Image (cartoon, rainbow, N blue to C red; front, side, top):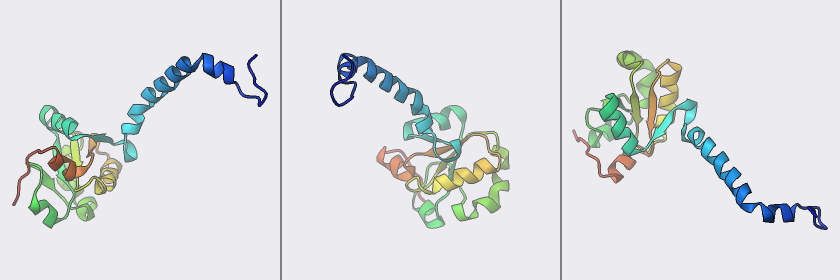
Amino acid sequence: MWLNSEGKYVEFIKNNALLIGLVLGSGIMLLLPTFKKGAGGVSNLTTTEAITLINRSHAIVLDVRSDAEFASGHIVDAKHIPLDQLAERLNELKKYQDKPILVSCQSGMRTTKACDILRKAAFTQVYNLQGGLNAWLTAKLPVVKE
C-alpha cells in the first residue's frame, strides 16, 4: 500500500530515500552555476579565482572605494575610480570594454552597483571580487599603500 491513514506516501519515501536524495542533489548541482552569479549576471569570484583571472586573462582590477580607502591599501596595479564617479568616468575604461574587469571594494557591497553600471554600459567581462579587499587581506594577498 502506498498511502498511510493520513494520505502520505510514507512507504514510497522510505523505499526510495536514496533515489530521492540523488535527484535533489543533482538538481542542486545543476543550479549551482546560477547561484554563483551576482547582480546582473556578473560572476562572483573568490580570491583564488580572481588571481587566476588576473594572471591568465590579464584582467584589470577596478577599485571603487573612496580615495582614503584606496590610499590605505589596494590591490597591485588597481585602477581607482570611486563608485560615485564611475558613471561619469566610464570613458577612462572604454579600452577595457571587451576585456576582463575585476571590480573590488572593501567588503563586496559596492561592487554590485559598480558591476551593474559597467554591464549597462556594455562592458562584456565584468567580475565581482567576492568579499572585496577584506577577503583579499584575509587570504594574505599583497596590497600597495600610498
